[in-house]
Image (cartoon, rainbow, N blue to C red; front, side):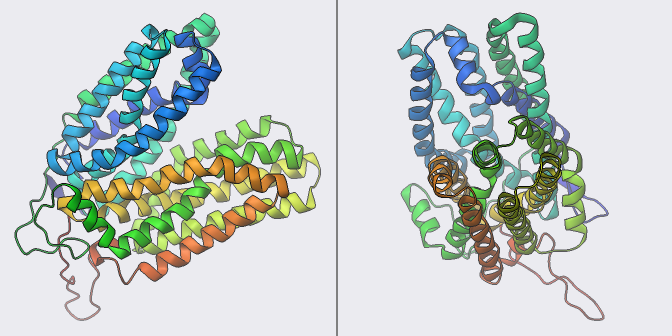
Length: 440
């Protein structure tokens, strides 16, 4: 599958195709996510109320489908399932302009939502199939950078389309999105995924027997793995912070700081540019430092907490407009650095902590922490904001610090090959690597 390079990382066969496919699909996502309600309203001609209701129901159904996607990954392999999901998304967006009735829109939206919600599980599993060791961290960082760059490019592209053709341009963006998913699928088809088949009696990453585990027994295995469940719970606390920029930040600006809404766009721009521009560099520096994945992920959570405390201070002092602008942008920079430190390490940690035979089920469980946090965030933030504008930031700061502490406490309970991007080295004359169980 790969050859070892000087840095100790594995060069993945078909890596360029994988990353290019991720970037192209991100362009497609960026063409509709910033305008999702308006996008589907204009594409289908249905009312905003109907569109919103259908999106909510199908989104919840998508969450329920994630465990089945994890099972499919374990049975058929992440690459095959990845290609199927790309195909479903391509077909769905090609059909949206023709789904002008409620039943048709609901049917297309449901099938597409099932693929969309499950895609992160499958993509993480695919990284686990094609990469080992520090290469997983590198691919995690590259993936996030390309997703941010692609979504930014997609948003700019659809803005230009709308400027030329008005709201009728949404139909063209739907077909453009379909084409993006189709091209991404063709590129990912070139990736060589090699699955390591565990032998009988070989322990998995979490100390689970390496033999394949079928059906519901696979999820019983996950539920018995207390360290991995702890890792998932810690990620839920951090994932609430990931929702802050898109959900809480705009509300906080308008209702508490009384700042212009344009600052929201500026904050998103800073975040996107930094993620796309220096994400790989930051992750590379973390890898070269030899930091354990648990500790670099904990550092990201601490930086999140620092940014949230900064929002509390800003909301208390309420300086003039210029000082507020400078402070907000500085806070967003700290927040983004936290994201860049946490995301690659946290993603690689979850992939490497999952036994090969049931990785899909493990990652479906882990990804639910993001989905549940995203579903809970709007109601939680608005309820806290109604009491005091600083209260949601205080809750997020405590949650982030709790996640950091949990990651540090879990470090000794997680598999060594999950905690370390490279095998730990014994200090001594020979300085030989300590053998670890090949988990993936």
